[in-house]
Image 1 (cartoon, rainbow, N blue to C red):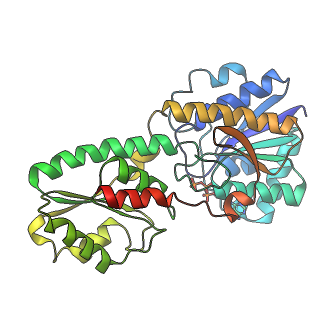
Image 2 (cartoon, rainbow, N blue to C red; image 1 turned 60 degrees about the vertical axis):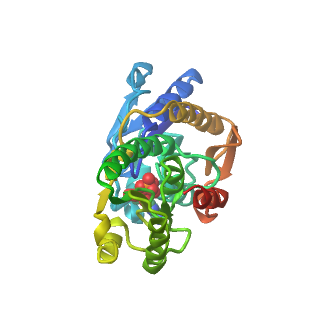
Length: 322
Ligand code: ATP
């Protein structure tokens, strides 16, 4: 293997830059040249390649976002788009690719492998932590810390005004961010996509909370929760909790930005490097992850087809502690 390409795709996550840096430097130290593809799969189709040298990845380990940019590409979902992409890769003598992203990115990479036999290795880069084969994905820890920081501030004002706050956190159809931030901020209630929550149940639980003379209260709502998210839930509850002055805060994209935590920088460095090593060792169509602090290779398809389980012990713990 003489030349690889590296790219970031789908939703960006803090630590992607650290992963790019690790992949580039590991490749160069193995005498493998590297093309960086800008704008994910769309850049692959548009031939938006840049040569990555050692200095190209200097001073980026601490930066959020991704220097290679990210995108969602409709064209790549079609065979014609992927054919164009593979032609561009071939023209640039790319032997293999390192794909940094979430499950969509891995589905796309799997298509390239199956249709054209291109060796692909995935690096889990998403704040949602919803990929099997790794205890944590790159960006998850930073996103949680950002959410916790914001929620602590909300807690102060909620307390001052004795308000009930519904705070929505990201995570798509997965409740990992909601569960851990809920525990870490001492939320009275945590609503997760994985644990069916109906508006009536929420009402009942909150009534219980206020029975014990709670004056301010915090509910963490995962964006993919069945109640439809914090705004909709507030609309459905407002008549019942009028006297508590309900407020809603949707944290949104602040959770995707910012400097990665040390945990994400180290994880990204390990995984970016391991991805290139896996290619050197002849692996393909796998994702690199860390399980119980050890590097692990998982067939790419299993990362999305085998649903990653929440730690339900934490959910029970949250109920006891709230
Ligand atoms: P995140 O979950 O953090 O947003 P992601 O990688 O899942 O990240 P997606 O937008 O789902 O983000 O996927 C990224 C890109 O991968 C898509 O824009 C599309 O170009 C490509 N892709 C996704 N699914 C497929 C598929 N089934 N076949 C081919 N390409 C796909």
